[in-house]
Image 1 (cartoon, helix red, strand yellow):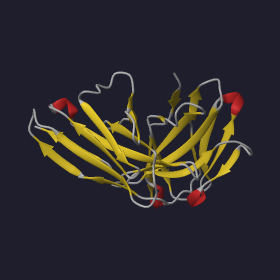
Image 2 (cartoon, chains in turn purple, orange):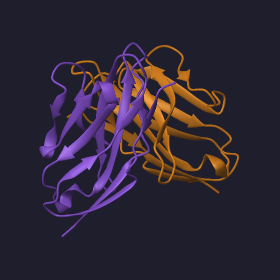
Image 3 (spheres, helix red, strand yellow):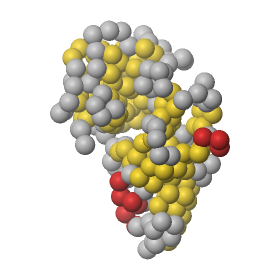
Image 4 (cartoon, helix red, strand yellow):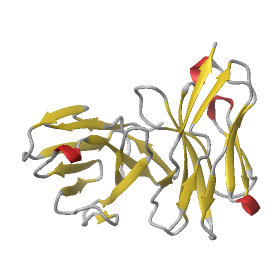
Length: 114
Length: 115
């Protein structure tokens, strides 16, 4: 079965710092990749997704992620974080032809300090 | 983006009773909905896939007789926790898949507390 690892469980940054959150998955076949964000007290929202094509994907709110197939990674980046980016971030993987099921990583809690 | 609602947002019940949670896609039709469980400081764990007009597909280790899922229409799926016990206390989240664009939209979750 596939699995998703997010190695950073808690990240604390100052405003304007750059962000990179790691995501690795274990599955040898074709996958779709997602990053979701959960702001405090709110529901999960899609930040960006990769299905095929350009491995550098741009999402909402200035986020981007790069799919590196050889490393089984899909790291999330943002050049300059804001206080409002404080949230929990989840990476998710979907196996193509696997019934549309998402497998989530354990999440990374990001706190941005003023 | 599309909106998915859940009702109730919070429920407290006594041990042994049953609780029904509704998940609705408000502005699109969803042939497939998913039910997740989220433990404190943990990831979302997929419980089952709910397909409109057919039986739900449960993940390994999830008791189908305890967590009854019904997907009676293209906009409504329900999860009934039967004979709830304190260990069933958790945050239950549903999602609905819109085929075009191919995206899952998540509900706000339901906090279940079983006393």
